[in-house]
Length: 309
Image (tube, rainbow, N blue to C red; front, side, top):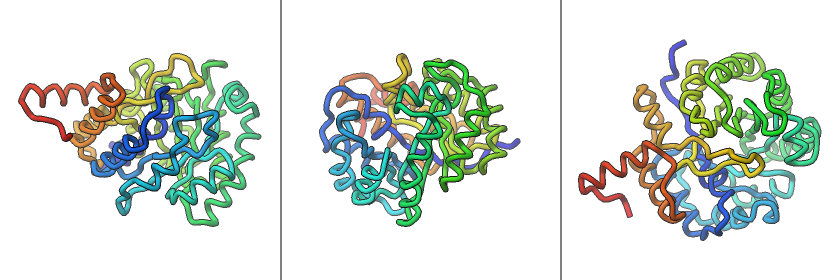
């Protein structure tokens, strides 16, 4: 199959990336990060999470962040919501899209949210109806689609079951997430080939972590399967607090570098994303996890070209 000519990137750094940071990040830093990513041309930015601050304290300022960002017409600003209380907060914050979530692993579902997969999806029925009633996009995310830290292997049939449940709730888009980064290219290709019979391939997304260094290879395999939506995190921020050893999402800079080399259009300014990655990494006091971003920044420094302040 020919590769897609255009790919949509969903930037998850401001939410999925920053939520695991232990030190409190000032609102103004979060806002500047989102604004930099907006200016870089990212078409969809996961900017907030309306969950209990008790569980995810880093996201306690989501309402203020959503109120202060400089929104660009045509850009989708997404928020993760666990229930109707979260939905109401996301609606008030003018989110364009709400994200619901479930796992393809019964063990992960029970350890993570203390209920079965079926129960977890059923809990989102009211959220799904409310999203449709208010004209918001509804996105579903399926974690542990290629492996689970507790039960190990996850069968494609289990992922397909969750995809069907989310489809029936009315999800406009469904993310297939390799939460602990154990997937390989062959697995990815087989999984998306199987899922294409359950949900339109053009509305399935790949969300890959780079624990075993396979994220870019997995993206290429998904591209070959016909997938044209991918999640990435600026500077490779993030991980999974419920999966020990799981490193961050694949870096946006690395994905853009790959796609540029393949001649695939994203509409995103790679140089501006490098700037954003260096900005947030400097604030966090550590080197970015993006190889392409760090290499480009180093090349600029050697040439005497300064980054955007």
